[in-house]
Length: 167
Image (cartoon, rainbow, N blue to C red):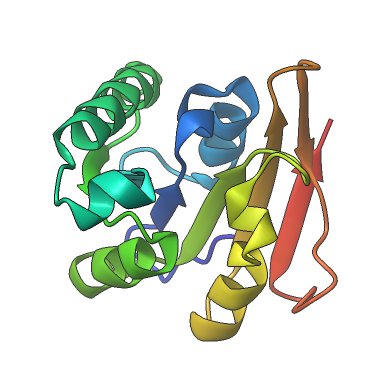
């Protein structure tokens, strides 16, 4: 899935919200890393907010919640020996990816979502839109915390670049 260019580090961009602490996300990210000494991981946790709070420019609680989720993820990936950094991103995950790629030219993107029916990101076709916009390999991870199911599943669109994982 990830590409390595000689001595150039493998650079993995991870975009996740509430799913950022999932076991399968951590396993999948570690599986993308071929050499932890030359690989870099950037985790982006969008600061999701209600429409009302967004229009009132009240994003403090959303940013704090994203920072807390992000810290848990960074601690866990860091303790696995990965070179990992994190940022709180824009509430729009496409914009968050775009912003991150400007500063962190990734070799692949890992997106973690809730399953269909509970995921606003899937309802807005985030994976398909991101795949169409960003010409990078993409790994989509579906985390169903309620049923303790975590999945890598295939997306019908851009199937040559998107892999969805399911347990």
